[in-house]
Length: 138
Image (cartoon, one colour):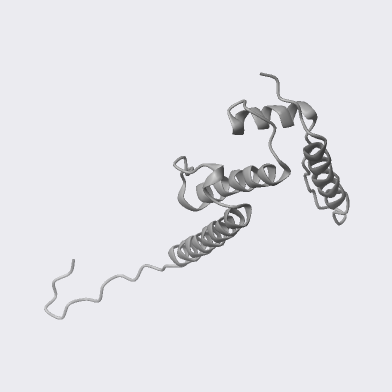
């Protein structure tokens, strides 16, 4: 079965890509920003994957799948494992985005804690034990 991309999805994705490219091009001097770029073949492949080859995704479903992909990355950042037990239809786009933000916030907090521990470890100074009064040294 050949999937045909709807004009609605094509316009939606092209709009997202145009906004993304404009954001990247507006980067301050010296900063590098990437942007998304999808052609029709990408949209077909994406639709085939997420609908098991049945149909074209709707714009809302496109956003939902992309939010789920971001969540998968965020979960891996926090826990070191992808949440393969989830599926894009399990949550709404907004719920995936919230869960992603929470995972990234916790991953950042974990990183900061690890950095603090490293600094404490590196700044540790060994102090030999005091001499025992009975003259026994260890």
